[in-house]
Length: 107
Image 1 (cartoon, one colour):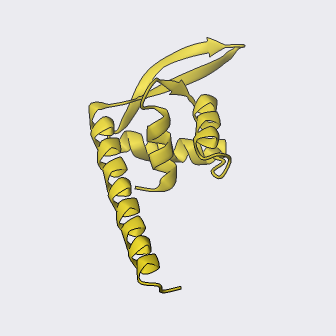
Image 2 (tube, rainbow, N blue to C red):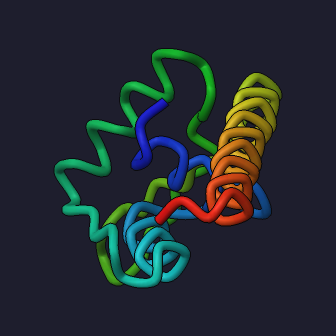
């Protein structure tokens, strides 16, 4: 799973969001490190929808424009849980190895 896909799924974990809301939340979650362009976002959303990890929740008119809101599917929840567990385990392994390196006095 790409970092962009992981962050998009993460933004949808607690609520359905429209495209611009997803872009803003990804930027906030990544502390500004990941800044999705709208075209990139919709490419990610299309792939996630094709994999049945997200789905269209609703459409609303806002200032004369249609906003599409996306939400996680049950499969999306499971995929996000699995990826979060994988990343947590990987970070734990890295931390353990760094501690071992420092304990051994290796610089």
